Length: 131
Image (cartoon, rainbow, N blue to C red; front, side, top):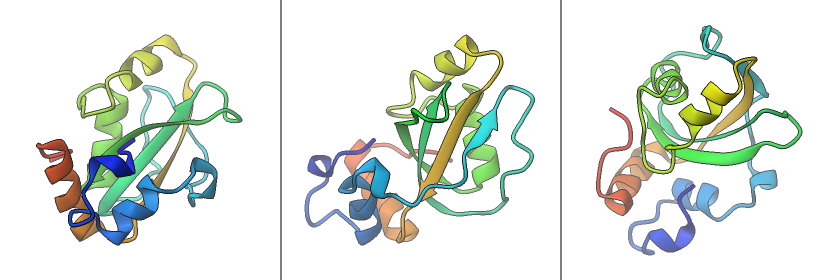
């Protein structure tokens, strides 16, 4: 997860700040999804924004995993979970998926200001997050 200290005050959008500065329990998460390599057909298409994914093999112990810019959430989240996309902070997610063949549980959330947050995260990381 991007920590608040990684972004200057000038760079931080309200949406990015909302995720980066919040405790995981105060963030509004999606319903818990179960994932295994058979696919994620039920995710909505065409959502845009900055997403945080948290995942675990136990749905009661979900942990933050990564921040992803999603131009089409179904495509990019699937890519991240299937190891097609190894973005900053997401290096261990594919290994975790492979180590749990019966599936993992995950949730995602989106910041309130996707347009500015995308720019801010690219500046902070120095590279695009998900194309």
